[in-house]
Length: 333
Ligand code: PBG
Image 1: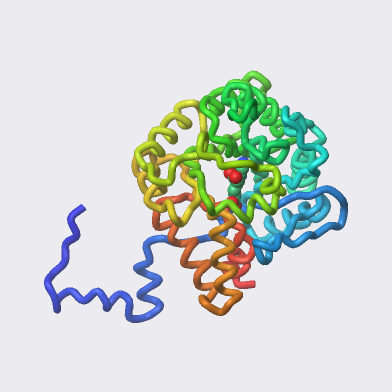
Image 2 (image 1 turned 120 degrees about the horizontal axis):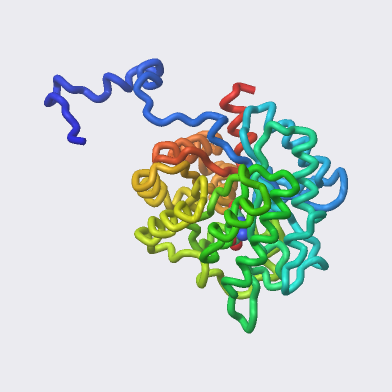
């Protein structure tokens, strides 16, 4: 598209910025509560609310309280909640078998939420890291992260989550072939309406630090995730991954982290037109909260600006720890 405008002074761009009414009328991207997916951290027990120190305002919640959080989210109009369990270190093993235990923390939370708030979409994390003695997203043998064995484990994990009532499965592991394997197994088991939101372009990022504290994976993890997560310098590869995951049966795709990868969001949306999401990850949240707590930036304005940027970049929605806070702001309460 070639922009057309008369030369100055016939065109003055400031005319449409003069009043709030004119600015609203000419606004291109808009953030609404329907754009939000709220990631929450789970822990065992009852009546427990445990602050995550590196993520001010974020807490690990026991299942009873996560149900209350889901009620609040639904009341605010937030369409989806995404569950991340903090697993008891005693349950972490090399074969990661707790991941597909129908009674594990995540699966119990799915059932409890769906029983009380059936209307909210429950999204899960499909990856082995919370259950892995090695802290990695895949099964480790002699220091190598095994692809195909991990995919088998992820399929079992997916079926247990679908059985528990999950609406959206979120494979965040970056193994090859997992989308096709999951989709085939879901069809075969009769879970034909369970959606897959693939973490298709997930980068090996320093911005996941606070999350790994929140789920208790930082202690276990040795080394990095560069043999499966993407190189931050790559962009064409993201398109190939998204294309591959869509062709294997993903319904929605994700770019992660968010703000440093807005160029990838735009390319993905333009290339495929599929439902596209960004994950504004823990480190992005922590930077905004940390700077705001020091009085260095206006936290509320920075939050809103960071979120509308995803809409401008072509995203259909955002996974963000700000979800309840921004929803309250957008709903005016
Ligand atoms: C791991 C997983 C990670 C996040 C979501 N799922 C961390 C990682 O890959 O090490 C990060 C989310 C965040 O930082 O907010 N399966």
